[in-house]
Length: 91
Image (cartoon, rainbow, N blue to C red; front, side):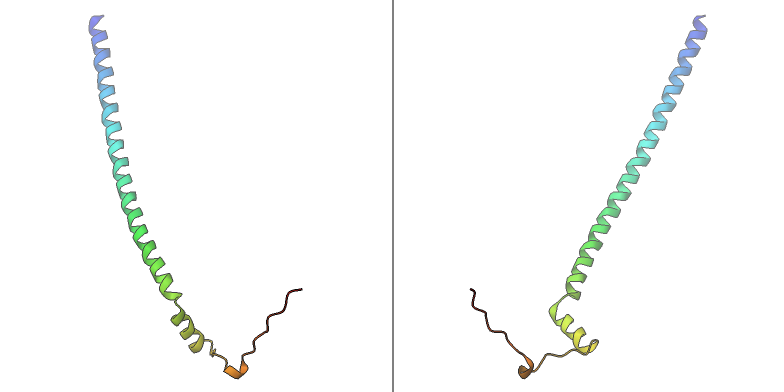
């Protein structure tokens, strides 16, 4: 009877050890996955900053004026074509 109990305790210890090894392996895999995702997040932040810089470059006034002249064939009006409105007196 004591031999059976000792065998049972050994089996329980083996299963517990296997559980510990399995959980450590899963923990290491998850930690590695977190590191990979954090590195990817850093890369995305850099790319986002570059895109913001590019967007600000595309929206500069000289570029907008050049596109308006070249693509849209727009031009500034002549001084004679500009009309101003007088301020209206408030009642």
